[in-house]
Amino acid sequence: MKKKGWLTLLASLMLVFTAACGGSGGAKAPEGGSGTASEGNGEAAPKQDTVVVWTYPVHGKYEDELKEHVADLKEKYPHITVETEVLSWAEGPKKFDVALNAGNPPDLYFHAVDGAYVDTGLALELTPYITDEIKNDYLPGTLELGQIQGKQYGLPLYQSLWAWGGNKKILEEAGIDWKSIQENGWTWTEFKAAADKLTTKLPNGKTRYALVTDGTSLDFIEMLTRSNGMPDVLNDKGEFQWNDERILDTMTFVSDLMKAGHMPAETAAIQPAKRMDWFYAEEAAIVSKAIPYYDVMLQNRAKDIDSGTVQGEKIDFVLLPVPHNDGAERKTSMFGEGYVAFKQKKDKGEEHAKNTFLIMEGLSGAKAGNSANELVLPFVRKSQAEFYAGKGLGTESTIKAAEIFSNFKDIPVTLSLDAKDSGNQKKFKEQVVKPNIQALFSGEKTPEQIAQDFIDKGKQILGQ
Image (cartoon, rainbow, N blue to C red; front, side, top):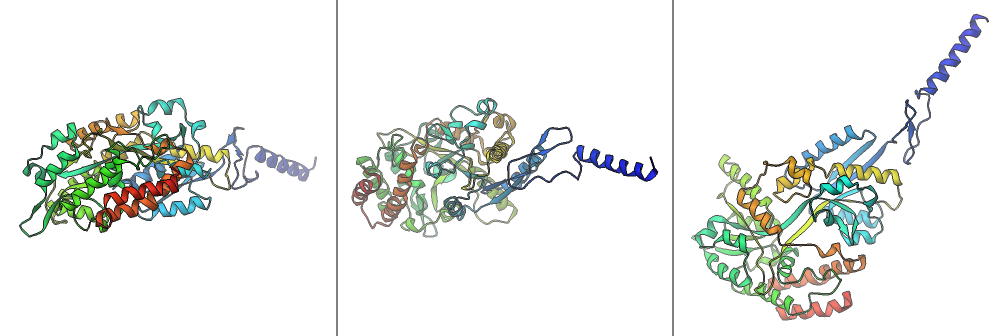
């Protein structure tokens, strides 16, 4: 064969060899689908994919922590790109609702599971992806905090715990035995007696109130109704609860506190951040709501006061249970907050759903237990508790109190309701409860008028 012929044959063989080895001459995988490209060893290589995560500044260091998680996940799953967006607590929920209603929610969203999400048909059921190993890592009763009617839609990152918080010095000066209260709880009658001692005039002429809360959210009233035998507007069977003497008693308790001057007259106008200003200024002995993380916040604030970057008095924090009605049981409002998974109206396929779960699990595993550690909240997984054993940031008394309070956990009703009941309950709270609580704080309505409005509107919205 002539030299030119040999060269032509050699070039052809090289092209065949290059194609067979998956070189650059191979076909480019199509974008956006769930197919795979071929690896050099003959196995199917995972197709490149992107998982979108919307979250919040869960704690002061969470954004840095999130970057570490994403880097770890990129090393473990190089075919998945994780796009994160940290939303503000004020505007984030609105942005998410708009995206969800448009049929284009993020793949993962930081929130408690909600029956209203399931009602959209876009919440991703996780049951097919959760292995026995993952299930067994969750502490008893915690994985259920991510379920709606027994179906898994979220992976909790920690057990959120709502309580009240007190100024240790002020409580002790008033002779309040806060240690006994942490252990044994306290009734509404006992709280009123304590409030009489805690409400006083300060040397500067201002009033120090026993209790301050914000007037724009429903946390305060929900904690009190839960501590008066009402798990929520509905119970776990979907039966209306806020239509009898229990809700009237609760409204009357709050009204009595306002009339006695134990709470600021301007409560209806107090924003969530502003209530903490009252507490920092020692113009309120107790703040509602408070989570155990306030202990860490006040420790950090004390350091800033020592360094001169913040002015004010240092405060030793005391975690307090929500008082309960004299004939009711002590209850603690606890929820499972973490990541909830979603599909989009234009479904991206099963492979994308699997990738979404891989990232979800990566953001919820042992190392992710730092959120519970930073917030001084109960862990949800054995691996998290082991990873952060001995590294707790809260004071011993706060950690112990949170453990005691968790023994009185009330499982959120929303986890048992169907989508219709859950949606109606949410509508009732927004349209009926919010304006009435504002009217209660401002004195524009009596407890009797509010209780009757609940009964009337309950028939209209809830059909009960």
